[in-house]
Image 1: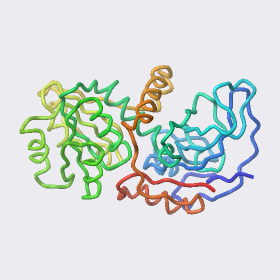
Image 2: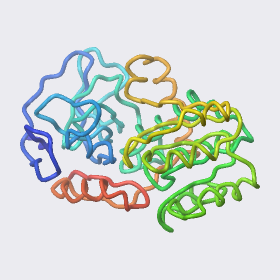
Image 3: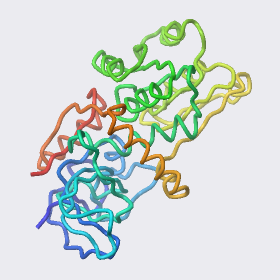
Length: 325
């Protein structure tokens, strides 16, 4: 019987246990996937703790993205067959050896992408694409400042912004993360905690303000980052693990700038056709090697608590992955 990381109440990783999953019959449009790898993000750990802005139903199996092999398909499924390599994304259920998903939540894995890379691809790259293309409307030649450039969505944003023709400045807290941002295509990298951080950002853009800020950090980072924007700039709010920032409202007025919210979950629910088109494009670019995630470490499913703690610490340059089997 397949196992999953499950809890009857929200809490830290120690609240969860590896238990047998209940059997689940397939509906006509559903697919049974034998999970081989699952990505762990900060948001996954936050959701598992019950500290995310939306709480899923209990009992809960964490995880929002995974990759594996199709084991069984429903009677109305035509796009997938047993043995297909697929990537899945959803609201929980991925820290497990098996999941049952509607076929629209699955994508074929491009040739040349391994299962660990595929497991951490969907959410981060869909978020970065939606933020920079749909919400930020980044144009070639603009300057994009990426906060948390060595993290999950930050590293994805570096690659997406570079693909769009932007000058990319990555801000990260460690030398390893700055090196990762540069390896991912950033034109320059600055030290996130430096006292002269704003001066470093300005110098990295030739003495000019930036056009777009990609902000998955929040907290004390948001105000100085917004101040780096020039006229007509766009500050994209992706998340706030650093805390919810307070921004003086005269700043958008003086800069003619916009504070823009990016919610990939609601985007997928409210605009499913557009979200699907975005996913198709990001996977097309992955197949050509333009977009490629970076893996920091892998853990066995049995070591899920250590893996979740690693992801929550935010210290790793690259993604944390659980492997099954």
